[in-house]
Every structure is written in C-alpha cells, then in structure tokens.
Image (tube, rainbow, N blue to C red; front, side, top):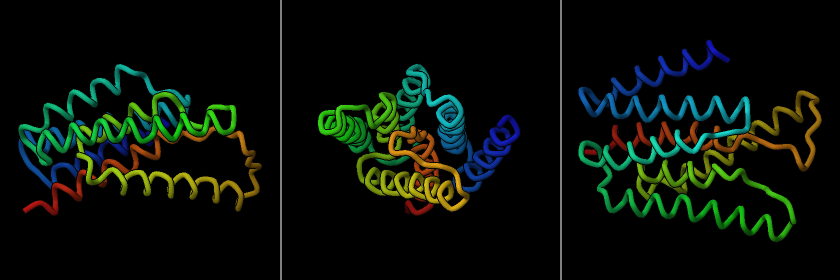
Length: 174
C-alpha cells in the first residue's frame, strides 16, 4: 500500500500543477493528498479519523479565497453533502436495523462539498457509487465471495470521485 500511496500522491501533484500554478495549484494538490490519505485509511482499516475530515473541511473554506466555487456554494455543499448521506444512512439503519454506511462517510462528503460546492455533489456521489459497484463486480467475476453484509470503504470511493471533480471544475472554469 505504501508504494500505491506515494504514486497516487505523485499523480495528484502532477495533475494539480497541470490545471493551476502557484498557491491555487498547491491548494488543489493539498486537497488531493488529503483524499489519498483518507482513501488509503478507509481502504485498509475501514476508518476515517475525524481530525483528517476537519482539516479537509477547513481547507475547503480557506480555499474559497483562491479557487471557485464561491463560499455560498461551498457552504451549501457542506450541508447538502453531510445531510444527504446522513439521511441515507439513517433511512437504511431504520429500514434494515443495521448500519449501512460508515459514520465518517457523511462527514467526508460534507467536507468534499466545502471544496466542490453543491453543484458537483450529485456527480461525485454517482461516480463513487459506480466505483463501488465496479469493485463488487470485480469481486464476483474473480470468484471472491460477496455477502450482503460485507463492508466496503465508501469513503475511498468518494475520495476517488472528488479529486477528478475538482480538477475538471478548475480546468473548465473560464
């Protein structure tokens, strides 16, 4: 896993430098590096520490001074990101009687919303869900047993979808 994290961080830095230079490029890289760390922890431990999410969230608010979207879109994104996944988790827990979403996933999606704003959140959630379905499909095709109660690192999938979203947003902005 160590080599994969280093290579992912290298790719994050290269991509950030491609879409923006200076402080903006550094902010984009920092967002990506935090997501790599969060994804690695979630993938290996099924755990995302709250302090990492807090740093990501604060970074999203601070980045509003140098990167789009505007702060109002970011604040709406933070609330919408957290609220949407919290409601999904709440509904699943009450319908099925078991946890279906990790407690850090809504917080992470809220922090991602503080970076991307509310407009990109549906695309990020869709991409993350598709990545998760792809992981399950690969497990099934390769003959690995998949049970209904198997835990998947959804935070890793959110992280994998969020960074390209930010890159595209910055690249496509006039």
